[in-house]
Amino acid sequence: MADNIPQAPRGEFVLFTSADGAARVECRFEFDTLWLSQAVMAELYDKDVRTINEHLINIFNEGELVQNSTIRKFRIVRLEGTRQVSREIDHYNLDAILAVGYRVRSQRGTQFRQWATGILKEYLIKGFAMDDERLKNPPVGQSAVPDYFDEMLERIRDIRASERRVYLRVKEIFTMAADYEPSNEDTNRFFQTIQNKLHYACTHMTAAELIASRVDASKPDVGLTSYKGDEVRKTDVTVAKNYLREDEVKELNRIVNMWLDFAEDQALRRKQVFLQDWADKLDHFLSFNDRDVLSGAGKISKKAADEKAKLEFENF
Image (cartoon, rainbow, N blue to C red; front, side, top):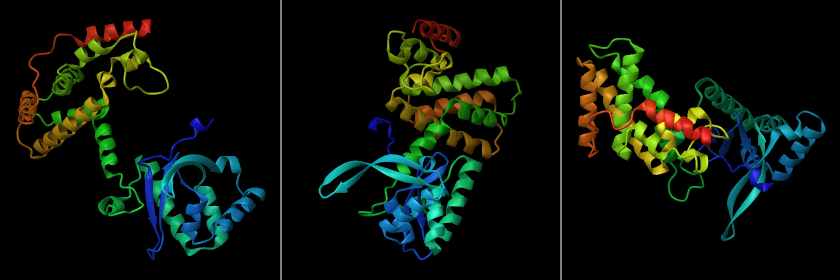
């Protein structure tokens, strides 16, 4: 049963600092809300843990909140003496945190409520919430507050390098080409060329070659290393990136992000560029970065690779 208890969500932390700077509280952010343990709530409101516990008991007994819907267990690792110990700790959502805040009549409670409302509003509207000041001013020395800047960068790279994101960005850049025609067929074909060159730079295979060489009904998950949901679907097996190893994914993400920055800079300078120029510029970019450059369209067509992938999926 304990295996079903989630780890505290790494990378989903926001830091609340009180107006007087006396309280710096790290809040866990998941399931569209904030979560605090009783110990952290006590730190937030500058009260004893026993006082926080008493208020929570009264809140639930009086029916102000339903206990089961406001509590979630997270497994956290903390230092006890000289040992690192894993404990399952009750965490309370924002409704419970604010309910306690009203009862302790703390000025920090008002500050926290205003801050938390802003965090949730930003997340619901934009799809993310970012602690700008914390990222600009990372912890130093033996700070108890972890620095997740590198992890955030890795996740942004992964999002930015997703096929859908790259396609939309590439299409937007290509519209500035002097000979661009708004034909989906042309755009798709050119996108496949760009995609193949990027895949080849990391794996020495085009997207189609990658799919054809790694899809295998006899292997776990048909040879996939990643896919959406709990089980493999037919649409997953025709996506080349789903077959990449972790190191290959990171390498591809870095290359894609560097090239997008380069292409965007070229486009924003408003120089006259033709579609073929973009392919040439990508070749020069890859060569400059000591990457192998694909010549031609590869040995396997996208159609043949997709057909093989779907057949292997049927036999899975």
